[in-house]
Image (cartoon, rainbow, N blue to C red; front, side, top):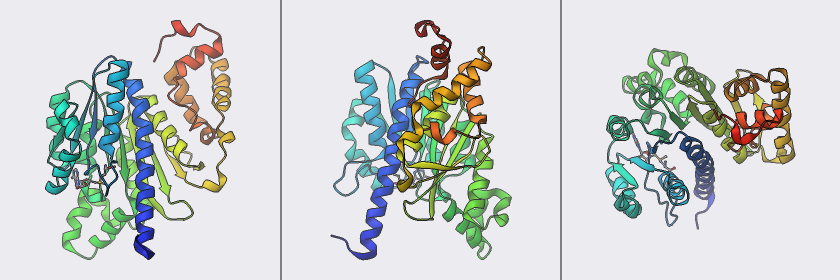
Amino acid sequence: MPSGFEGTFERRRKEWTARKHRVLGQYVKVAIAKLSRLKQPIALVDGYAGANKYGDEEIGSTRIMLEQARNAIDKYGWDVRVYACEPDPETFLQLEENLRDHIQSGLLRTFNKKHSDCVSQIQQEIQGFSTVVFLDPNAPSQMTVLDDILPWAQRPVTDILGLYFGGPAARIARGALKTEGARETAKKIFDDEWQNISSQDEAFDHFFKAIERLKKYAGLYKVREIRSTRIVYGIFGLSDNHHGYWLLSDAVARDFAIIRQHDQKDTTLNMFAHDADYSDDAREFAEIKELIRQIVEKNPTLTGEDIALEVLKQKIGVEKIFGKYLGRDFTRMRNEILGKRVRNAKTD
Ligand SMILES: C[S@@+](CC[C@H](N)C(=O)[O-])C[C@H]1O[C@@H](n2cnc3c(N)ncnc32)[C@H](O)[C@@H]1O
């Protein structure tokens, strides 16, 4: 059994991995259900797949996507396919071995390449499929806005969920002041801005500025360790549709305890885990309904999407509603509030 620092590190790594996987699972499950309404095949892309086995534990992001895909196929007959990139040769062999059955069944396609080098091939294969992309690098240098995020962001009906490491990114920028080698990496991550980045917060801000213009809806949650002040990473999401944004927020909020700070920017929320403050009552579903009732009664002609935007504009209450949305759509809720027959509702 590991002891001391090693033991603590191992426990933390497991804790973070478990959390990350919970957010991914919660998000992907509902995202598939939402996207299925468009009646076209769905692609799930794991940009940074890993081996999908840690020690004896058969866990991993590709497995989560496969499980949800298989469930959707078997239960509802939807057409869902999974794609995974892993450039490290040894890890790739493990990935193939660990997920052999899914590769043989045709559900999973794997690529022994960097994510940025797989994107065009995957996009050619999936054509117009609705797509969910998961970007989970080990380090900030492995994922750039230009090569890894932009090609997906430019594509319609493509939701992106990813992780960004503000602290390590800021350290790269600081290191670049000293050595020529580190400068290239810093420029790839920050463009010419690298000299202005000296803290974790500045790195997060720079990153969010770079991605928020790429899609109509963008969110970034800075997540810190429980019982610590250290922010560990940011979970970000991009979507053309309000559902994508809400599903991400919902998945994050259901896993972590409470959103303590809303930074007033409509689309950015800073999320802090704080288990001692957790109160399920604070996010009662009735609260979201009440908020929406007020909006709908004032203007009954708003569409579901308009309502979502209105809700985002409310500076209060946002932290109360995440964690209860659970993939419901606002059109349905509007019709319930107005007493219309839900079955005839036009969905958005
Ligand atoms: C954090 S791990 C992935 C964990 C996995 N997503 C999970 O949740 O189970 C990051 C993986 O990305 C791989 N990697 C490194 N650079 C990459 C790149 N440019 N494109 C794709 N994968 C990369 C690493 O070899 C490593 O296996």
